Structure formats: C-alpha cells, structure tokens
Image (cartoon, rainbow, N blue to C red; front, side, top):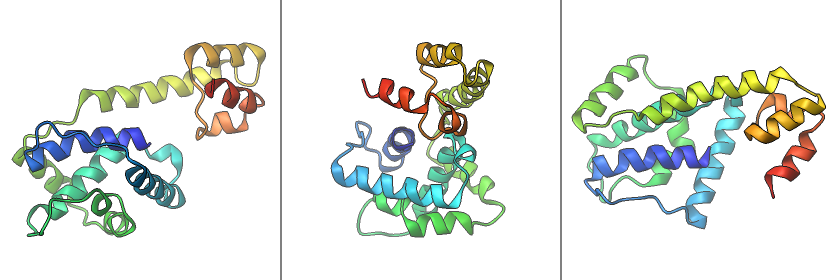
Amino acid sequence: MVYLIKDCYDIIYPKVSQSIDFELKLTERIRTILKNFTNLVDKRYDKDSIGPEWIWEYTIFQFAYYDKMKTARDVQINWIYGKKALDRWVNREKDYAYYNSQYQIKYNIAKPVEIERIEGEKEFNSRERSRFYGTDEGYFHCYVLSLFSEFNKQCIKCKFNEECKDDKSI
C-alpha cells in the first residue's frame, strides 16, 4: 500500500504545489509515516476494502481539506496520512465526493487510468488464485503469475503461504 500511496501523492502534490518535478522520496521518516498510516487503516478497515480507489479518494479529500487554509508551509505528508487525517476521513460529510470532484477540477487533477487498471487486476488476481487453490498446480500457477500477497485472505489461509513468502523474497 505504501507504493500506491506514493503514486497518488506524486500525482496530486505537484499539481497543488506547482512543483512540477516533485517526486516523493521514500526516506526512512516517510516510510515510517506511511507504515504507521497503513497500520491505522488496517485496524479500522477490512484489508480487502482498501484499494487504489479508496487511497485516491482519501488523498484527494485530505488535500481538499487544506486547500482554503492559510498555513506557514506547504501541506506536509503527515498532515495527509496521520491519525487526525484518518479520523477526519471517518467523520467526513456525505457530500465529500462533490467537493473532491470540484477540487480535482480546480487543479486539473485526473484520476490515472492506472488506478482503474489496478482495480481490474485485483479482480483478476482473486479469480486466478481461486482456480487451483491449495493444490500443487495452484502453487505453480500463483508463482508464475506472481499472485502472492502477504495481506490477501486467500494467500494467508493457503497451505503454500510460507513457500510463497520465501519465493517472493528471492
């Protein structure tokens, strides 16, 4: 999820800050912030409900929140991906989608096709994992297609979980 968050941030922040060449560097501090955020999200939501679409809407919502505020600095990453920000998201108004879309129009921010592609890929991966689930053929099938995910429920319960973890670390 850290890389997905980085991708969204790298699309939105340059448009808002007018720093066209900006790219988030995953320093140890940034990784810690994002890892802490993903842990907070994991405690509050089912992992299968959190995907690229959720990350995109969440990130737009947080940037839009700070849009009209006068701050001494540009928006900081821990303002977007922190406990207070997640609480703000949980307690958001129902019409947030309208404001998100207005914000995207204002800064000419288009949701990347990549996010829509990832959603389709998620469905494909789930279907493919199920085809030969728990069999030797399934292990090979997942290995060849790189379907293993340490956070996926099917993978967690699969009898080849440890082998797949070892294969992924190679």
